[in-house]
Length: 80
Image: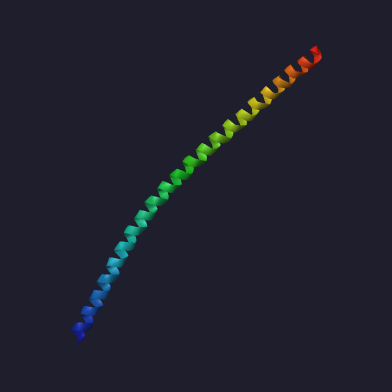
């Protein structure tokens, strides 16, 4: 009888070891995915910053063109 109990205990211990090994592999996979996602977040943030700078530059250029156009329209009104 005690041999059967020992076998059941051994099976449960082996099952626990297998479960722990699987969980450790899953943790490693999740760490790798997390690292990849963190890199992607950094890339997206860098792209966003570049787009913000480009947008600001384009807005400044747009403002300059508007001022030039207003100046030209003002000169045309003066001629009429």
